[in-house]
Length: 278
Image (cartoon, rainbow, N blue to C red; front, side, top):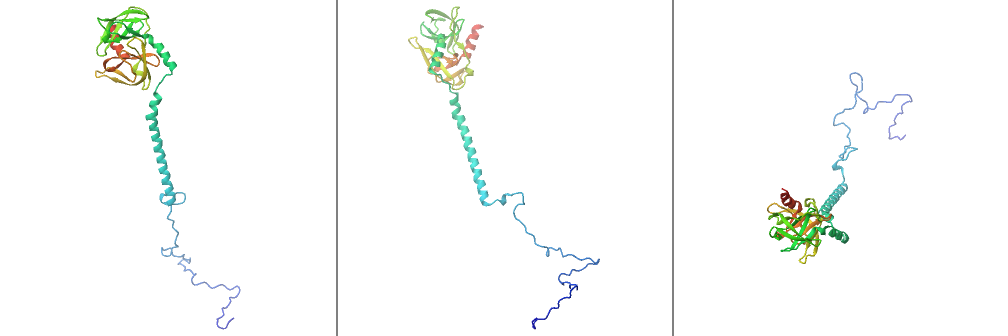
């Protein structure tokens, strides 16, 4: 031991250790030991987290990089949706009408002409023109301006036959005539109201020499005159009296001279054949 330092006496073995003055705790009235003060000033500080609790993630907890990635992804999704919508609209606007267009091969066209030409007959009385047989019993449709003295003469299979006027409709510009009893190659009646846009149409007429003239085009839409008469809008280039057939060989309309109007067959039959039967 150094002389400058006081010696610390070692406690004897087995002697009790002295109580530390700072660690001694006061006793309460019952003899129990009082615990440390739990005041706010003496409470142990706790670590507080500013983020979201474990197991959940708030919007504010995302890093700037993650938020930027989500924003770019959302923009890409919106652009993809817009492109998809525009593509669908373009398909409806442009592909739809193209799919509805109907055309015939040269062979099918020729067969259609052969199947329908028998109903087209020349008017050999003056003024000359053409008529369409619409009934096997001998009903004819012809432009009203071809009828003179309530009759006209047609040629069928080399025979000249006189047709008598049954009804005339000045609003339509069409006349209904009847032939003598017999069997005739009549056109099969069709319905203009069942036509769809782009459907194929065959136009049959006779030229000035009396030869068969063919034309073809497509149906556009149904219309009406100022008087409310149903008409067909087509791009078939044919003249007055021409008969229009669909691709099944059914007669659907008659072209008249007045403003190159095509009237629906069902309207003609209703106004003329119906009156004639009364």
